[in-house]
Length: 387
Image 1 (spheres, rainbow, N blue to C red):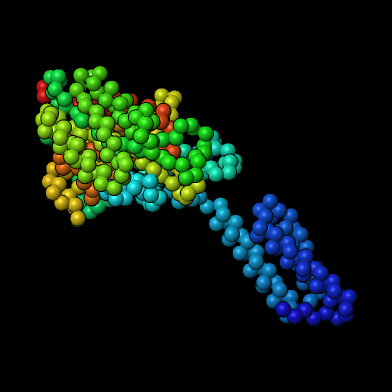
Image 2: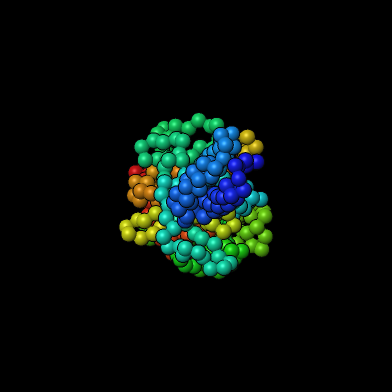
């Protein structure tokens, strides 16, 4: 831009003021803390500069400065927008880890990072608590919420009203099998708002992985007189790939040895992250204590998923469990996920997969949720005892 002035003194003053104005505008982009000062000083500088210029030069500079102001305002608005709440939950099949960052329509209704330090130590990321509400569900009936991922029509009221083909007996014989396809999935040790970047979220220690959570569920069922077996085979160790094939062999072996088993629970935990340095822990407070939010996954014979003719029986069971979660412990469960998946659920009419929190929940939160899940399952299964 060319600046035309009547004498050298005016020209020098105009150049100096123009440089000051440019510096202020630059700082207003890079330091939000001086925005107010920048705005005041910038207006004075612009006014002084424009007074030294002819009409045409004033108009050009005024237009440019207005453009800068608009860009600065737009950048501030963008910076204030919240991060997306969309994440994917769980693996599509065993070849896709549940710890892969991706997207889903599970939406959080509230969030807190109060336990996290303002700046985590070097080598650590932040953990944010979120409560996942029913807002992401696209199918709702009373207090039952479903996130349907496929174009398959289901009537929640009708499915719940129809008894699943499951008969539970308190006759001393095994009725339930708890197992873990991804047995070594584990949790954080502490609730301090941080996690060590790159640290493994798996463990072969039965006191730290999914076996510890499964024990809580099994204890509740057995205490109620519903005989429950808990398989502790580590199907994902030493190799993660092929875990579902190995767990299928395990389940078939139990069903052959104990034909009285009616229900198979595959207990996992999820993994939710927005980046390599930010993780999400689905959390709810129940009876004054933090619990890891849980999620049921029911599959369906659809698209590439075949040989799963009894998916509706499993769905009926899953919906009853979902209803019990919400009735007994509101907020414990995220919406039930209904998708074109299989997860060996074709093996019985009472097979469901349950995600117990995420890898950024603590073990204690997940174990507490295991107790709550156990209570709800007792309620559902006792309703399936012949009268």
